[in-house]
Image 1 (cartoon, rainbow, N blue to C red):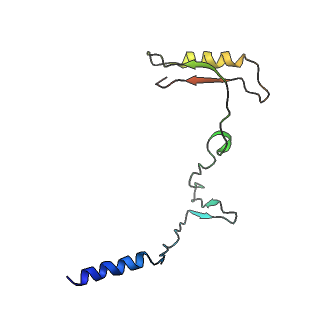
Image 2: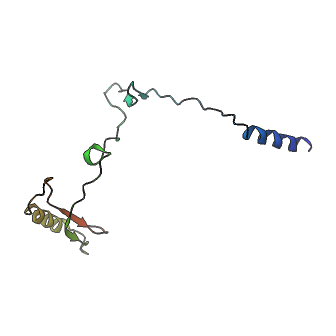
Length: 114
């Protein structure tokens, strides 16, 4: 049992000594960092690659959504199908004049199943 306290002290000394143990860099045959630092994907025999969703979203991703005035608010209809109501709200907004940026306004769908 005398050895156990010595091992604990030894571990504590290494832990506080600033010694860093680096893990080997991960490698993949399917993706690698290109010269510009962006991922480059290898295609299989059919031309398929790993999907890159980094540019998904508004404006290709990384772009804030525009701040628009809410022209219509729609709460979910208990019947469960709001398709016609949503289309009517969009049609009403289409009749508004566009602002300097080309926007007319927004339909706010309140929480729930539409």
